[in-house]
Image 1 (spheres, rainbow, N blue to C red):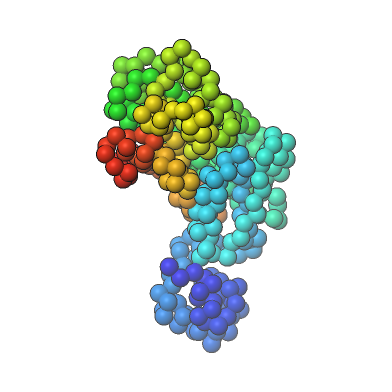
Image 2 (cartoon, helix red, strand yellow):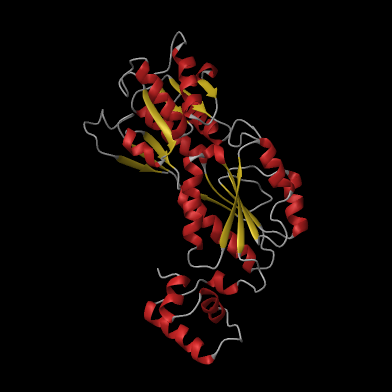
Length: 343
């Protein structure tokens, strides 16, 4: 799909001039307007309804609040955000959150007046104070990979996604299944979250009694995943399979299993979560979360909020997909191929 930059290049004008033509701005020379319109026809360029509806006088900047602890995950979400903005004049201001103090500062001054038109909040749960500040500032906000009834959001049904993974382990004959997870938002560690709920639900549906000693919450890091597996292996009856709440933690699980001489998946089956780029090279069975799509849909929702008058909050949940690789299922199925099962 051609972008506004492609259109400007084809017409021999600046991006700002092309944007003024698209918005119907009166201060454009007729010959220039005709040149841009002719370029639109040649390229088949069609500006989105949302882009055409955006009012004048905005900063053309969107702010993104994103936690660094999500690492690979947030990079994929940002790729989706940038792809959605490619055909607009909008640019991004990214505010990274690494410590609780960083979040407090960002939440104290979200969407600074005159600096951004709206804000995307990724994998962070908003506080009541933040929502009040956004309302007072008249700043539209969209949650990505988080949900709150007071704000529009794009997320995934993590409970259903986790249940899909655990049902796969059960179908392979596992009855002793561990959980290594992390809080949805480490700065607001409310637990249990959706993955825990889906894990428990799948066990109960299969008639397997949950074992609290199998359920560990740890850091969102390979080290956290490895340390959790050490604790599970120290049990008198360790699990034969483990569902891990992130591929990042699963990397540590696989490394620890290797150091203990365990064969994966024969001695220990492992399922991760997110399907980061590295997962396919590790042969990691995982739940594919549409990270880029969440970013793209979040931008579309935010642009819609900017283009309309106070629409009601909306929530959307995207489907996840189980991708079966060597660490659980594919090896026993007789090959290194990849099987998929969608929600």
